Structures are given as structure tokens and as C-alpha cells.
Length: 241
Ligand code: AP5
Image (tube, rainbow, N blue to C red):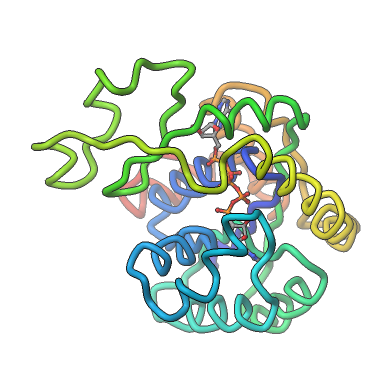
């Protein structure tokens, strides 16, 4: 059975952190619309030039464009056995499009990570990302300029060491704008999912490890399976859930 997971929640809730690990241990792709757009900005492609200014202000990219990006990504062969969506859908038209795209793909589990706004602002202001590979670190927890083993993902990170930078949309002003947009456009959309048996909400205020455990439990419960069966599935893919 395909494992289709949608991570929902506000900026800084931990969607990307959890999506990355869940996808890796289950051998399915993580599809992050934010990462795809940031990569386009980084490479100064036409798409990147079109979306950069709006993203820097914390605004949403247009529905048609983002739906087309996700449609193309989910059609690739590696997404047929499942996917973890991070940052999509964010509006009612995107949610409707996702229903159409996944109509014949088995159940789609939606998990909302809940975190209070002030903690979200703290996390986002503290976030630094590795310029080379995009790995995250918390500048309030680590003296990151002197800790190089937090990121070992690429040859450059391992040899030269990571260069930590703040995301261009992580200033306090922009994150508050992103939260406003979240509560106005995205949170109402979550009501659309709430009535479904495959929807679950989890507490994102615990440690990343505890949130990971809760996520595995929530996905298993939404699929009507014991959490152990999900761990077995991960082991079969060579990972450890
Ligand atoms: P996107 O990249 O999707 O940003 P976001 O949804 O605002 O989410 P974040 O990446 O800020 O947070 P996250 O929940 O992934 O948390 P993370 O794991 O990083 O989108 C960026 C922009 O792209 C949008 O503003 C928009 O312009 C555009 N866009 C993207 N998708 C779009 C769409 N569908 N439609 C239209 N426009 C779109 O964690 C955050 C920090 O907290 C990290 O430092 C992490 O280490 C830390 N952390 C994680 N978990 C914990 C924990 N349990 N305890 C303590 N710290 C934790």
C-alpha cells in the first residue's frame, strides 16, 4: 500500500524536520514546495525570479503555479509508492487539486503539528540553514559558527564545513506576516480535512524525537494499523521508524 502523508501546520511547527526523516526512513520522496521554490530562487531560474520578491515578503505563491509544480512532482515514478508533502496544500484550491491528483492512490493521511505562535516566532528567528544543503540548526541552542558536525550532508559540508545563514523570510516582521497569512488562508483549509478519518493532530511542543514518535503513531492510527506495522514497513525500506 502506498504511504501518502501530508504534513500540515504553521511556519516553524517542524513540518520539514519531521517530513525529512519520515520520508528517508520509509524510502519515499519528501516533496517540499518551499524547498523547490528556494532552489529555484538559488539557481536564479525564471521561476525563481518570478517568486523571490513575494516569498521574501512572506506572501503565498499563486495557486496555479504551485499546483502545477506539485502535479509534475507527484507524477514522477518515485512518488508512486508514496510521498510526504511538506508545505502543500495551503489554500482551498490547492486542497481540492490534491484530492484530484491522489484520487486513485489510496488513502492520504494528513497530520497537523500544533505549536503556539510565540514558540513559532522563537524557532523561526533562531533558525539557521546550511547554505550548501539546506540543513537546519537552532542558533539559540548551538554556538553554530563553531560547531561544524551539525551538518555533514555534502562533500563541501564535510570538508570545508557548513556556512550557516538565516532564511530571507525568517525575520520577525516577515514571520509574523507568514503567521497572519497562515491563520487567514491555511488554517481554515485544515477544517476541510478534520472531518476525515485519515486526519490527526499532534502536539509539536515536545522534543523532535517525541514528535517523531507521535507522528508514527498518528499515521498508523489513521491507517487503522498498529504503529509496529509502520516500523516494519520502514525496516523493509532499510530505515528505522
Ligand atoms: P515553507 O518553506 O513551506 O515554509 P513554512 O510552511 O512557513 O514552514 P517552515 O519551513 O518555516 O517551518 P517548518 O514547519 O517546516 O519547520 P522546520 O522543520 O523547518 O514556505 C516558504 C514560502 O514558500 C512561503 O512563505 C510561500 O511564499 C512559499 N510557498 C511554499 N509552499 C507554498 C504553497 N503551497 N502555496 C503558496 N506558496 C507557497 O522547523 C523550524 C525550526 O524549528 C528549525 O530550526 C528546527 O530545527 C526547529 N524545530 C523543529 N522541530 C522542533 C521541536 N520539536 N522543538 C524545537 N525546535 C524544533
